[in-house]
Image 1 (cartoon, helix red, strand yellow):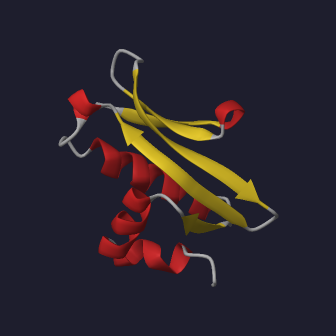
Image 2: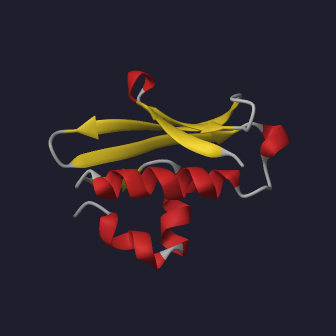
Length: 95
């Protein structure tokens, strides 16, 4: 089962396959004391269509929520994911 790990050194969440290979990532930028911007999400083409980007988004958003931050989805995928998932909309930073 693929997993997601926070890679603070690279400021991204890594999507890991069972063998440890990185199949994708979601870049983030911490802004001030309250905001985390999700700036870019990428899943390698050979792994697309398997729900891995959604796993990546869900795990990153849960981690941001647990940290007490709000999220700024700058990445089009993250914007669309949050728009489709009302449970994550309260996590959006106030405009």
